[in-house]
Image (cartoon, rainbow, N blue to C red):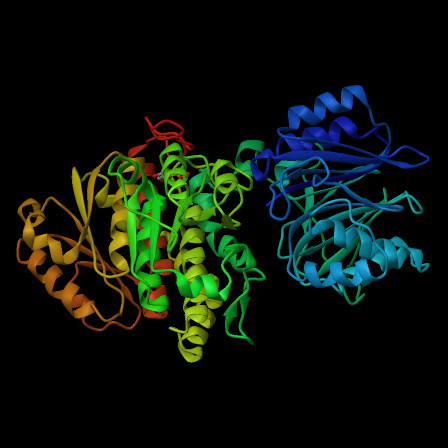
Length: 609
Ligand code: F6R
């Protein structure tokens, strides 16, 4: 997730591009850059870190010109350094990109064979070289971009300028967002509406597979195969604050709804259905090492710890290696026994959580193999771990984690299948079922998110509860724990997440008509057992809200209300059962009027022990 802005018109555009990037900084902030055509040539200024550093660099090296592109980066391939910052230049071409190019290694190999030298470690630079190659063969900018993108597999929004045809910006989109803004004798493009909203309210979001030419006079729009597209722009009625949140009331709600896209980005290029395998050399374990591992420890805190609980179950189930989950703060304190045959996996959205970092260092010092699952590239934890599997959720602004959690779940499936295939414990048939189910999840998740209004209505009565109990078994137990954490974090209602079988060993004493019970009970091998546990709660007058699989005919006799989720493989149910719980917590908090995006006493990054 990065931010793109582009301009062509009569104004000198450096300040305008920086201003647009400022409103896109929520999409990425590890480096930024501009490329502007000054009447003779394209000049580029880039800087690592926050946008302010680019502003400083531009003071020393001002850029003048009326055609330009800008970018704020959220690193996916290559560390956040100046050479990896966008725009990327290849000969007469400068390009900014948001997305992930799946076949970048294959394309890089081809280009290298033709003598191309690369300045960066990014997937993006490869696209710049592909366009330059087409341009050098005599094609105009539009045709060059079109021909280059036909060779590319993956997600992209691109904006490209050309020293040989400097009166235009060429843009294209597949899976990553791009909106075109129409001014009076000037045109804009951006990853998101707020970037250009101060300049125009007339906009057209590009559809998948569209490519456009932006001269000052307007937009010429085509599909990638060259067919002309005649869609008309419309007027945006949102104000700037609404636009920044994509029209959602809070960042948290926006991020909940972004999850199908975030999962697609995490899986992009990593699932090979034809080979029934996970393609992720970044996991850093060859077959012999994967076979030699005798135990896996997951270490994490909070929500990431709940993802780790799921990872543990899947690792044992699919890779048949003993696995355990540790709260990072406790792992440090208890002088654990780890060694060279152990794999320690640190899980952290921020990559900066001090408890997790200290635990990881301790494990590494004792000789364990280390890997991390992290969202922020080149943060502290991946710099220490032996290997890093990045979730590509993009920046998460809401303090309560949502999309980072579900992308961590996706990373858990990737690792378990990767280990299972290499250890010979996972049959091709089962691996195929899991991987096929995994790539279909974004579709199923969209179906759950479509229940938003129904879930909002079910949340209303929960807002007056003093306490709530979340129950789950098997893979639904971590989800019950996460559901309870989410509710308490943002609504300040006391909530417990319990393994349903444990209820009778104590928490059942809490149950009465005033304590809502939220039971996560999708169709799986433990369904009958949790159904009995829920009946026990019902017998004590509990009001039960069930999350169950669509088509469950019995649930009406057990629960007072039910949210139905699509049927998925029993190992993958957390992806569809998590979403209703996030929405429930969100709406309860919103009804209560709490500060949803910045709940009291919490911080997004916890760098104290
Ligand atoms: C809850 C939440 C926290 C974090 C925890 C660990 O919504 O976000 O519980 O999960 O502070 O943070 P990371 O994942 O950054 O290590």
